Length: 139
Ligand SMILES: CC(C)(COP(=O)(O)OP(=O)(O)OC[C@H]1O[C@@H](n2cnc3c(N)ncnc32)[C@H](O)[C@@H]1OP(=O)(O)O)[C@@H](O)C(=O)NCCC(=O)NCCS
Image (cartoon, rainbow, N blue to C red; front, side, top):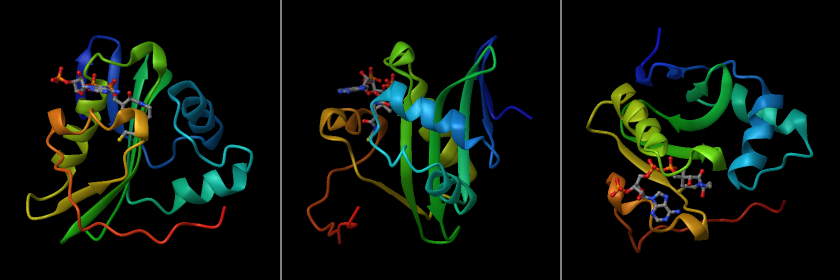
């Protein structure tokens, strides 16, 4: 059942079973940097996520939001990616709205922005904070 239909042939749904091969293609087409040479790792990322929102245009995967949450207090938005050919059309915002619709409003949502997307976040409601700390992964 579509969560939201942006245009007649653009459909946003929750899809926990999105194929890893399609996700890898979308990462490359959006500019998101992930371990795309390790399909098993991408499959684990999908399998252990709590909420995955996909956007398809005439069946083609053009957007993805992937989140990890306790459904009570906090949610980490691990991926937000829109295919280059479809950026700046409100799809990124629609993915975040679809995620918010799945969460109660007593849950905060966090994300790490790509350097080139730092200005994307304020218009869709994210606030920059100074008290976020990260322990980087080794690879
Ligand atoms: C960042 C990304 C998800 C935005 O998706 P999108 O569909 O292009 O964004 P939207 O069209 O919904 O834009 C929402 C708002 O952010 C603004 N915006 C979008 N991308 C922007 C960017 N790179 N820099 C500055 N502002 C941006 C838009 O102007 C819009 O503002 P408005 O509502 O005031 O007009 C997409 O560009 C992307 O996949 N980038 C590469 C991956 C990435 O950087 N992901 C991390 C995101 S934190």
